[in-house]
Amino acid sequence: MLGANIGAVDSSIDDSFQAAGVPRPRAQIETTSVLFTLGVLDGGQHLTILPEMLVDRELRSGRFVRIAVDEAPWTRPLIVATRVRGPRAPEVAKLIALLQEVVNDVDN
Image (cartoon, rainbow, N blue to C red; front, side, top):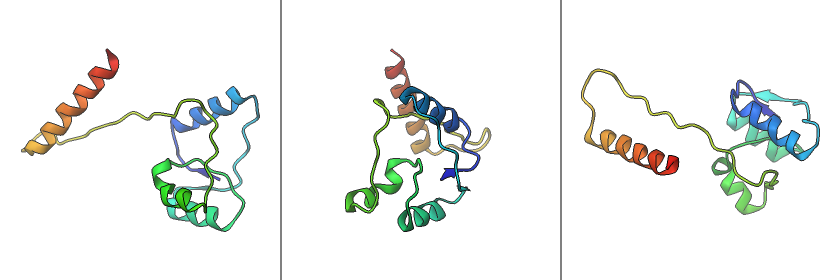
């Protein structure tokens, strides 16, 4: 089962299967609904890729099983969008500054 319109994640999926030396399975189900995905997973024998935080409860209870396939976890770019005009709350400015600090630390 695969999410529809997953963008850059699609190439990461390809890379993981290629690195493992196995062909990528063809998705039998495509959906944009996380709730549908969770329901299908809970009721059947399907495989999918989801952020671990979305299925943490199911993993801890043993209802779902995590299959580790890569040595390093995937990362995704973080985008912060704000209005060009208009007031910016002090908390927003602090968050942006903190994120820039973290990115600069990682780059160095």
